[in-house]
Length: 422
Ligand code: GLU
Image (spheres, rainbow, N blue to C red):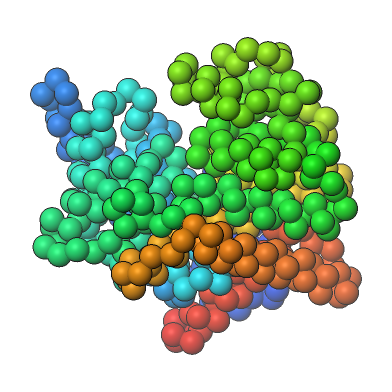
């Protein structure tokens, strides 16, 4: 079997190329959109608890800012690398464009293992990151946010460092901040909430009764945990399986959210949940469920397991969980695969609301935030389905991901054209 391409940046380019072909994208626009506009790498000295200084490598990539300032999270991950950050910054560009919010795409990352660091070291690293990248970010330049293993507290330290350097308040330079430090209501679970709006619309389209459905989730971080809570409490669905990086658990009768959260908090892994049976990540993907939610990291559904998936719907809450080869297999098998930059757009949409509120100095209620989020996500979903139908009428069956790409790329290309970039 030929080796499957797993480099996230190459994957993002392959996805773009497919869309460019379908929509007959102008060649110059295509070339501009295949590479990031700006890539910055910095080596960051950090004082550790034993008095030594350790050097961490950090990245910030501005992929495209034709539609507005760059926007995207910062990941702290031991396997972080430039190609992953580049891919994630491209996906942020498509995410903001599909949502039709006036922001471009960017992403940051640091190679580090947060689990082996104490709070002081994390603070030193966060402040060090901001000292290294302060000239490249800002409310009208590029606006960071949380991502894998970064938190509202980390955003607060970064804001504080930036404001010290600039000598004035600038809350709109970073989002995902704690509510008590000009964060937005509803931001903490907005990624999952947006995903649940997409699931609601998908279920309507597929005539699936969510209240009778069974769900399996990979990941119990910010996205997976709240997806579990919202799916069980609001949609009344049954979550029967969950895994995290240490292990997993399966109970066809349904897992208890409160019990699971407690176990995760006290022991560090969902694996220690009492009840049900233990399962591996691989097994989770093969379960006979209605909805499978990858909510961890990229490259989880590949050509090696795509043919073993038994779910009717795959809801990509993580960034980049499905490879292009797996994409094809799922499509041929009639499995509805809802793409990451639609499903997980709730996070950046509420980040956009946070940025707007910071600039206005006027804050909204949680109810307001959810209502506005629902309107945007439902509109994006509708535009994806409409584009699929338009292509079908022309004799081309395209995936939801291809449709989403066509919409997003077209908007960015038009903005670049209007600016005279090509
Ligand atoms: N890190 C999140 C994402 O991948 C949120 C980004 C943001 O809020 O800017 O969409």
